[in-house]
Amino acid sequence: MDFGHRELKNLANYINDLDSNKIIAQDFELPVFANNKYPHEFVKGLGIKYSDWEVLLYEELCKNGLKPIPQFSEDQYKLDLALFDKNNPDRKLNIEIDGEAYHKDARGELIIKDRIRNLKMIENGWDVKRFWVHEIRDNLDECLKEIINWNSNTTY
Image (cartoon, rainbow, N blue to C red):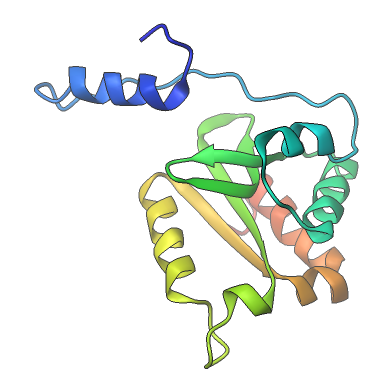
């Protein structure tokens, strides 16, 4: 329990609470970054590849007063960007930026692996918002608006 590893603590709590069907709320600190620039060194230290589109969206969200966490670890996944509601810690948004070459199938739809991931994230209590790269490139303001609306509870 005191090892300092979030996933191991979750597992220990789960095992301890199997009989009571009670899961203890987790308290962990989110990383804080000093400015509105993408934390390249932090993410590179995780050994994760990321795109220029993730960097652009991160920095634009920061300019709009939001503080997303890049490559946040949830379950078996690394989220492109994670956004937490500062007024409701149970409310969280998984933001994914998808390139068509890796995330579209032959019919032009989101690949099955990503659909399953969405369902798993929702099951874990996350809201999920996916943007295609061309949406970020061609209509960044509308993408920002959707995330800002989620953050202010107006349309999600």
